[in-house]
Length: 309
Image 1 (cartoon, one colour):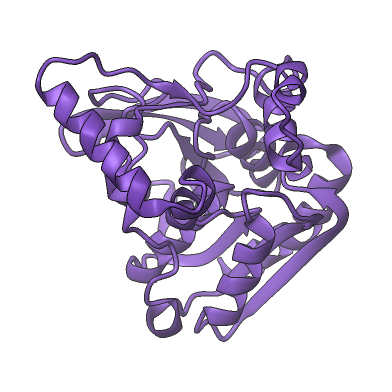
Image 2 (cartoon, one colour; image 1 turned 45 degrees about the horizontal axis):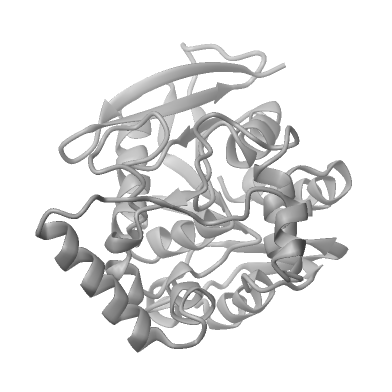
């Protein structure tokens, strides 16, 4: 069984908290291929990116680093609960830096995997950081698109103005309040008339013992989301995304848009070696932790990384 070591390392002006997952037969005198694993929006390193995918990849012989995003979880940074795509991508770069400083890591054999928003952040990192040699997106969501569409109820200019008003009020003394992105329970969501499969299943994952973790806040400081409004995960993919790429999606599409985003980046990537895996009959949140769809994903992901790292 894989073992875990919690580490801290320097980011910009704060430290990052991360877990290193090691293969069962780990020997620090040897060198290993490594993988950076990036958690979803509102999540933390102890959830799907860590306890499911990092563990499974460590069992395959890789050293896997899964970090808490800056301003979130056990990582530093203030104010808390900022979700800034540029910083989330920068977090991946610092994770690569840290791995490349370790004597037991082969600095030329580092890949990356991410889940939900973390999947699109992983792709965006790979577009301009070619230290990453292979990329996997698990039900990846383009956060910039989601903000402009679903979060904004397809009225992005109005949301931009609301964010500007919140930021102005806070600059003048108003409290910085983080908003919970999800209803408190599935029952509350249904009572509110919510029927979207992604919202209901996200609530069932994050708000129950199934996936709930102390640092999985599902909260966001909405006044700081202006940076996401003009961001796009797939910019320049046609030119610069050349690494081997695997995109895993479920066939049951929901409102967060992983199904459409998966097909979009698969079609746009300049990668010579690219593959899309569709888990038939499974949804976005099924791919977080349910045994059968995770097995479908790992049956392709593990050989992909073994081949390209």
